[in-house]
Length: 122
Image (tube, rainbow, N blue to C red):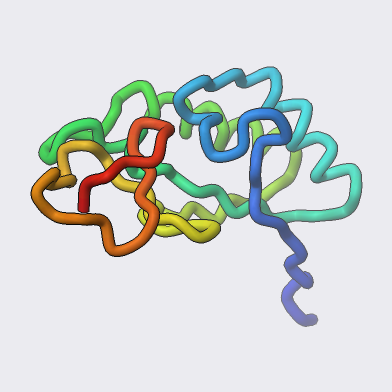
């Protein structure tokens, strides 16, 4: 017997896109994961936006960790497997960076977003 075929999607919150970690609502995730399951998918790839997840160089957000545990429970309830992409720094064109990593004396090599806005630092 062969392994089951895995069919999944990248998860972008319908209303919040990549900003769903900073404005987390488990009810919305539950609704969307149920829909993902209902259309026949069995894996969800999540992106952990670096800006939200590592607010300082030496700390990971406890709120985000707790929310990820909630997301894992919601996925399990919907028979979905998670594929977690840790600390997304480049996605959909621009670079995404936590503010503590930026240097205002260096021009950005490309568009950089930090704190939800385009910045002039590299």
